[in-house]
Length: 96
Image (tube, rainbow, N blue to C red):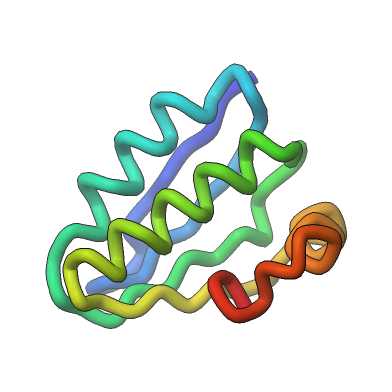
């Protein structure tokens, strides 16, 4: 299981692969390092193949990093599993 975070344009990123327990630690580190400036970022999740609650923690970490940097993060093309977990945990105000 692996993932790839790729910058497609200035402050626009796409994530491909798996957002699961085995990738969460490295993904959290990479997202925190990426979203550390006061910018308006977008993260396209259309390439996410597997997603679990550890992937949700990765998104929450990215949102927290943006908040600390006084940046914004817009999530695009959320797979059904992502939408389901965001709704289940009532995280629309943070990740919506």
